[in-house]
Length: 324
Image (cartoon, rainbow, N blue to C red; front, side, top):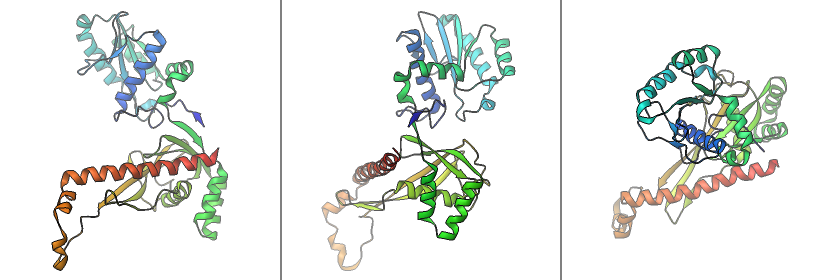
């Protein structure tokens, strides 16, 4: 298990933040304070007006631009220049003298040229600089990154052999031998990222079956104290979209180093939601009416889902422990 300094989701995250742009701001603020040996740099409240972070005593303004895909080509230089112009409008008010662009990718020479035409003295802190600081402040930044866990190829062979009939199993193993590459596997129910070898000849359904064998997630369960039944549904998400089960990974465009998400959805049912008729209608007494009130259903549902989430997490963790 290792720390993988990739400055985009799901590798870089803050548990309390849902928006990656907010995660990037918090990450930058933390590292900048560490590097400057201060606690003075702070995240500005909206509207930021082109200045996301500010260092008052040194009069440094920071603009944080996060590229969620992690791809340099997705950096929008026009948006960055708009932020520069907005920051100029509040320069006298804030009193900033130095302007720093904090970006999580490497930007092109042409983009850098345009930025410096807009603001000649701009400082650009791009991917390599942040990775360097992560290494320098390893202990302090460790919590911002999901740990990377390698799944040995033998475990993939074992999962194939134990999941599919022998003839199809042999076919999948041959595909893995002839055309394999590594992808990063993320689950919306776990806090680690896995690296695993696959073949682009596999179908999406093949991959889901292999993942099911790996993690052995819980079967449907009834939580009698909450009177809620919970089950799971699974899908493979790539580039923000669920992928069709019958498509090959090549068909959906998954290649070396891509991130796929094993998306696990908890489906719940209130055991009181059944219909009553005939002679049993008189059994719906005050206690049952209380249990079926909207507020009570939400409480019971949240309690059951929390308990089921803990079981799911334990299943992932047990699989991870078998790899060490």
